[in-house]
Image (cartoon, rainbow, N blue to C red; front, side, top):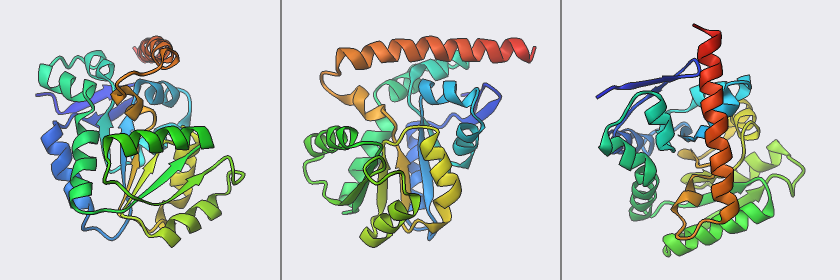
Length: 225
């Protein structure tokens, strides 16, 4: 199996679900914050033109492919890998294992609406999940120091983030060393694909992102032929 994905001048590991889980298990015993990042077609499209997003992707300790189009664009057609990406196997397995460990979770979102939608999803899919706290960036005026203080006061094991890029990338590049948690898991909008009935607007946005992603890949290739 191809072990590396190379797109838009970036290199990512092409781990199987089992390999992703094995790597993530090591994070729980480390003292420093470890970043798990879902890489979507939207994020890669932004990375084509925004250096902070590229740096944010490179900073992650584990990159999880969130869209099958990333694999096929890189020439990877393994039915196993395409299924793992489409079904968001890592997210399901990781959160389930964290619950078995009785981990505590802290939620971070851009605005109140996104926070409520995310919390409702988690409460429905993972009924035993409890939250040590949450932080809404817009409500607090984008205050990074306040967010770090809130997280550290709650002392969670795992921070679950649905912040947008490049805001999240900029924050982590500046503040990673100050955050007292085991894992920062950046999901983006990945979880919305797991809903039983995603909204029409969400699916329409996904079609737009797919078009932008393909354009970004082809434009990069044309510039670097």
